[in-house]
Image 1: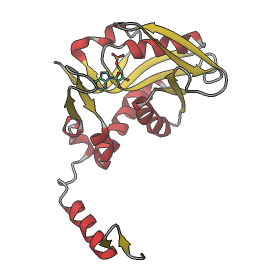
Image 2: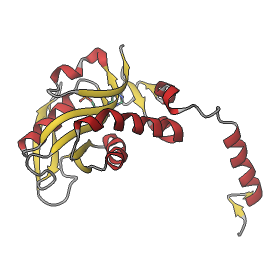
Image 3: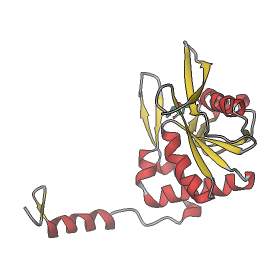
Length: 203
Ligand code: AMP
């Protein structure tokens, strides 16, 4: 039925969009924006006792997301990366626009069995058991300057594993970057390159 979107007439739909737009908080300028205001924390996800930092709300807010990518780009640019490697899956959301902003390449580190073609893998220890990550065999050219990107660094184990995999493939890892760092877990102590984070939580 033309002009009727799910029971709303087109004009009513347009009006509701307008109300949604004008009821937003005034636009904060990028430099003043506190990114923490746009990160939602959800208790007991994915299991009891974990406070999950959800970046969906940051991604959904145009100015906050733009400020996030701009700030990361400014922090990472001096390392002059050839390639950003995003860690599955939220790391992709951060690394891809950042690679675009920096005019660098982008490659994916994924869980075992998700990437097509020839892959190489790295298995690392978790608190209980092990995990395996993979990258496509031709994703990294020897000597390329690489930055590893994820949404959040907690214990640092995932980033450390990605660095090991990339180094094994001949890449030169020059840094690691994330939006959120849980500093009380001291993840950066096990990451052998400079770490850039946009916000940190101390407890
Ligand atoms: P880690 O290897 O301990 O540094 O964990 C980092 C990875 O786990 C990242 O890919 C994060 O997306 C995810 N992660 C760990 N802890 C959290 C948390 N509290 N909130 C959201 N994501 C988390």
